[in-house]
Every structure is written in structure tokens, then in C-alpha cells.
Length: 402
Length: 227
Image: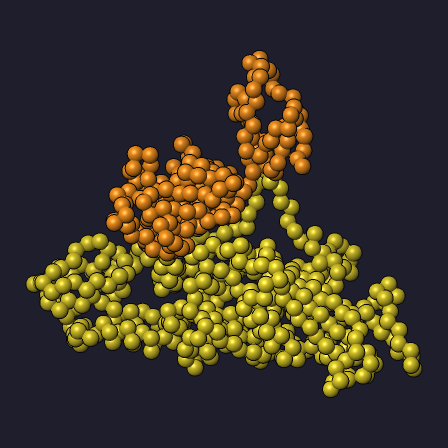
């Protein structure tokens, strides 16, 4: 089946909204959607909800012969599947580019970072080792699959318990769950991916893009980090040019987000452990809210409305002063003026404006646009330095109408 | 397939003794029995109309319904339009007001169109037109520069389009905005600023699961928050 095409007006609106630092669901630039982590009844089964994106990860293990060049290391195998229920664009069995990219990135993030001690998975050197298999299934696609997949995979790995093994001389006994308690994997650290999407050639940055934002983005930067501020992998796709301190800034943001998410995972693991110990109910079925068609229940959706009052007050206060920010700058022809319509009044320009615009040249507007791109890093910061840049965007009137 | 149900009709109806029972969407007749084929609440309208009120987001094209479509391709004499159904619908070049073979309408791939179905059944490819039977546009055609398109459930769309729609009346009191509602669950909103457009879009999306009272409290809160 085909995916719903993105109409021109949606694309324009999204880009315009991003320029005004507004997101569709009212989040701020660096906000994540609400993350919910729940575990199933089996050890190693984990569901992650990132907003509406839903992913399930299941960890299993089996005994196999190890690789010849590494006889005393266990193996880890990752597999991501894009289920057709996630999006009409996904078809079962079709190897799409997205799938390959996600698989590769998950492998790089978790295997190459050596977050799991593979030597502890060895049973008999050269003959029998544990192979840990992580299957990640995508249940609903609403953007930012990589982050959700990495959270699900690492949470499932932390939750998983493998059967205990006893070695007596030549004999190896694998104890079932009833005979001996299964033991957890030895995990050194928890690498988590954080995705940054870039718009307008790197000028605007959003963390945790939703599906529609992903469709209009120029490029994506994925940073996999653990809470000890060690970068496990960085990948930039989409071919955008990023400046060095843009990347540095992103990594700082990522470290903050990763520590929050790691705390969340640990808390979820704690709760699950407590529930199992006290004999309380646990598992997937319990974590689902009771939903009935006759009952009205929905998550709290935040309506972004607080801005408007402050904005209106600002505008009122600035009425006397020549406005420094203009929603859509208009270059009027010489000899004409503009009144009303919310834009700056250019009838009877005050003298203060003329003093500000000392460098009145025709190319000023062009230079401003280039300046914007160079000062891209300034725009990336949310604590706004942006006001100082926008000062330059003023209606230019070559000829005053006095 | 479905459940077979039977119930006691309330006293008031048995007097008129309706011989004919009209089964609406979600109900199917099987000889003497009436079978339910969708999950939902059974609703009844006097004197003899029954139907199932179900929550559905997937649209099935129906003749005469006005929908918002997205142009996906131009091929030969027709446009291919995505309406959210299982198949793409076709829209002829000539089905616009004032269009002739020489005077082609200015429609690009990715534009939004508000149009009506003239053919919509399960055996044929659905067809759309942007004119009514007199050849006038009557509000249909290409639109949409500068607004936001989003998707809601079909039930909410029907509630919005009902003649005495409370939701529409409540929304009107907020601030001025333009809205186009398609029966395929797509809604297009445009307001003066991006902020207001986003507010309206979010309000509509959250209206789905609210009672009238909760909705009115929410709208009042938003109206107080903004100026």
C-alpha cells in the first residue's frame, strides 16, 4: 500500500512553523515526547511508547558453537522488523533502505560499543557459547524510530535473564527456570540514541522529530551515548553540512537527554522487579489501560496557548518603538508606504529608524541571508540569542515618504 | 460473523408498529435476522432507523460525499488523487469550473482539492469532480495555501458537519479562522497566525474523546488564555 503523500501546504506550514519555533504538538525545540516503558511477563520482553511510536523488543538466547577466531566470546544478533501495521508504507518481506539503515545503526550502537560482556556468555570455550538474539518489532510509526528502538533494545537486554549453567568437569548442565533462578546479562553501560533533525540547511534543529517533521527535514544526526557521557556512535544522514560546534552542542543536549532516559529505564526496571518480587501483577496486559468504547479517556494533550498573551503584551509594549521583528518582511517599491495589516507602518518613518539603518545598501538583504546561515549556530540555541540576529531583518525603504 | 441481538422495544414505539426497519451502517440483514458487523454503540432514531455508531478512522469512498484529496500524479487527462481509501481516485481536467481542453486548471502535484464523488463503489475506481451538476464550482476546487491539514476520526467529522453542530458553534466563539472539513476525516484549518492555527488543530483533535461539558471548559480556558 502506498503511504499518504505530503501535500504542499502541509510542508509549507511545517517549515514556517519551525521557523517560528513552533511544533505541531506544542513541544519546545529540545523536548522529547512522553516515553512509556513497560515489560511483558517473560523476561526480556519490553514495550516502548515514544509519543505514538510504539516498539516491542524481545530477547532470547540459545547455545551455539562460537566463531572460530573468537572461541570464548558469545554472539549477539540484532534484527529489526518493520511490521505493516506500523505504517501503510511498510510491506512485509520487503528490504527497504530504512530497514537496512535502522539495523545497521542498532548494531553499531549496541554491538560495537561493547555494552554487553560477551566473554561472560561463554560456556565451553570453542564449543558452546550463548547467542543472544534481540528482535525489535515496530508496531506504530510516528517518527523517530531509532531512538525508540535503541531504548527498547537496551531495556529488554537489561530485563532479560538467561538460564543458569553448571559445569562439572566435562559435563555441562543447563538448568531450566524452575530448577535454578535465571541470571541477568552483564551489561557495562546503556547506550541510547538521540536523534536531531535539521531544517533549512542546518539553520533549525529539532530533537525527537515526529513523523510529519521527519518528512520535511533536510537531514538527521543520530548520536548514541551513555550516561557516562561517552559517545558510542554518531551518524549524520541526509547530506547536510554541519558546523563543528553544532555537533558539539548536539552532543551536550544528547548527554542531558540520555541521563534522563537512563533514569527512566532504571525506574521501570525497578518497578518491574518489585512487582515480581511481591507477587503483584506484572506484564503487558496489566500495563494496558482499561479502554472501553463507551468510556471517554485520552491522554492529556497539551495545548500550546500560553505564548499568545505574552506575545500580545510584547507587541503592545513595543508599539511605540519601531518593531525589531517582522513576521514577513516586505520590500516595498520606492515611493510607496505600507499601513496596517500587522506589519510595520512605513508611513512617516521616525528618525530613530534611519539612524539604525546606517548601512543601507541594496545588498544588505542578501548579506543578511548569508549571515543567517553562518550564524546558524546562534539560531540553534534556544535561550535566544536569536533576537540579536533578527534585529537585522527590518523593512528596507530606500526612499522615505516624508 | 456478527452477534445476533434482540431487545425489548420501549412502549412508545410498539404503538406505531413499524413493519419496516431501516438498518443503517454497521447492521446487516440476513433473512429475518439483523446482524452486527461493526463494533460500537447501537443508536436508534424514531420511528424505525437503527445504526451502529462506531469509531472509525479508515475512510471508504461513498457517492456524493465531499472530501479533501491530495493530488499525487498527473497522467494524461486525469489527476490521481489520494483520498485515504484503498484506491486512488481519478479527477478529470475538465471537471473544474471554467475548464476546457485549451484552458487547463492550474493544479500541481501535492495540492489539496475539495471535491465530490460521482462514482464510488467497490467494483470501480472512484471518480471525483470539482463542479456540481450545473457546472459551478460551489466552493470546490484547489485550496490550501498557508493552512494546516490533519486527520481526525470519521465520527468527529460527521459531528462537525451536522447542521446544528455544537462543536462548530463553540469554536466560532474563539477567534476567526477558515476551516474545510472533508468526509474522509481530513480537516484543513487556517488562522491569522501559526500559533492560532496550531491551537485550533490541537483543540479539534482533542475534541474526539470529550463530553460537551469538558469541551466547553477547555475552550473557555483557551479563550481566557489568549486575547
